[in-house]
Image 1 (tube, rainbow, N blue to C red):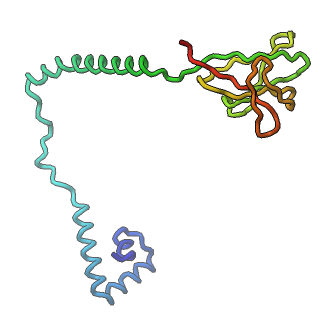
Image 2 (image 1 turned 90 degrees about the vertical axis):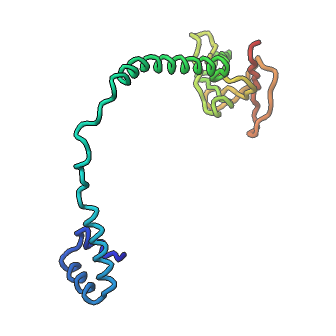
Length: 187
């Protein structure tokens, strides 16, 4: 199909383009035939369908089937509800959503004005710890998944130290050390 014929059928040509279209039809018999066939197809598309065979009102269901539907609806909804409740109970009873442990990180650094925690469980992003009054202790409560985690404390924005209460440590790739915390599932 030629682009010009399509534009003509869709009435998207300006006056100059219409003149070129008429000139082309006059000089090119196959183009004339193709364009005429497209126009006839367009005419068929635009004809309104015969709706004389469609009834004004849909037929009504028999009285028996209406009574049956009224009776079965609550039974179907109740069965579906019980099935959904059973499925949810099975899913949540057999698979814990996120096995986690609640951990409290505490460090005694009375000279520090700011302490942050970084670790594998924070994607190594700094998380601020809160001072416990004026006692010199700092704390942070976090939910951790079970498993092994590496972390360190950052004092006053630059000094990295390990947790003095954890003996297991490892060197990191930047010349510092990280503490290793293993969170185990309770029995």
